[in-house]
Image (cartoon, rainbow over all chains, first blue to last red; front, side, top):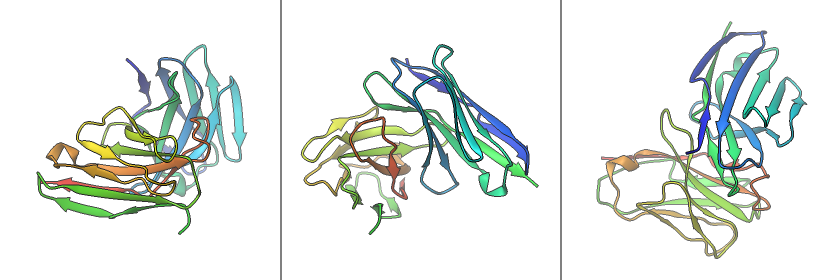
Length: 109
Length: 114
């Protein structure tokens, strides 16, 4: 079967750095997305990786290792507004998105 | 409108009733999707449409039907609602119909079936 694993919940301090991991086992791989979802709202796009390596976009970076079936989202200089769930999703061999359950990130002052 | 709209925002429905969730986008995107999101589970694809006039089944299609008569609208119908269909429903679209493109989500419909 297809599986995407993320930690259920993480806590970090305002101003700090946090890394949210995502491991996947899917039938094929055609890219990996990270989305942010604030409570009661819709998911919004953060990043897309299809090649190995680090993609940096402001305070957020996303890393991919296809050989390890592993990605992480790195958030720097955390702000209170970063409190949200972070969803990892993989594009499988049928070009369908397989979603992880999401990681709820709690930021403390 | 700008983006994707969904209606209603929330609904409480008696089991056995028929219900249509509406989704409209004004971005001229080819592909549209319906997901349900339940606590502790990832988004699960119900149905999708790669272009107007075509639809396909996702991971959890049973009890749901869709139509795509034009580019803008993609309604989801529950023919006879059951309590297990209590969930938050998101409609999404992407421009080229390829899964390489990011998906844009509507604000969601919170449905409770009693």
